[in-house]
Length: 177
Ligand SMILES: CC(C)(COP(=O)(O)OP(=O)(O)OC[C@H]1O[C@@H](n2cnc3c(N)ncnc32)[C@H](O)[C@@H]1OP(=O)(O)O)[C@@H](O)C(=O)NCCC(=O)NCCS
Image (cartoon, rainbow, N blue to C red; front, side):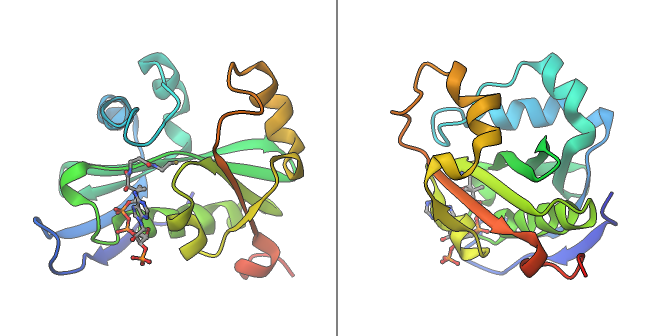
């Protein structure tokens, strides 16, 4: 897993500013990760994640922590040997706009590179944070592993209005030679 990165958060317009650490989630974080996702289902058009599923997958998550306070999370999920997916990227409503989401995304990109995935993708209604981090918007069929794993069984298949975004990790990180 990625080593813990100490990051000094930006100054205003953030209402609350602290020393944010991006670190791998532990079992003790599962409840808070579940809460962050559940509280932002509507705002983020997020996929609902049952607590049991979060507990099972918590080793895949990175969290943004201000001391004991977990203020953000994001999951790195393997879709196939060729592509991983960023899921459930959430920053607490009181901490948005301070760069926490970007730092989580950068750490997830680094982690995907260190696991030697060639590509990283996300399906999102908020393409901007991903594009700012280097992702490109692509047609959904360019990520067939996602279509097969999730989209075909989804009620909103072909009409979900999400953006598919993808990052070529061979170019974006120094992890590949
Ligand atoms: C999306 C989210 C994680 C971004 O976290 P954040 O800490 O506020 O983002 P940052 O401060 O690091 O901003 C990163 C960039 O994304 C942009 N951005 C952040 N949230 C955005 C939003 N909701 N809509 C459009 N752009 C957004 C920022 O303006 C910034 O770009 P800039 O440098 O050009 O200004 C956060 O808004 C969130 O939790 N939203 C609800 C859940 C969600 O939508 N998740 C994404 C789907 S996977």
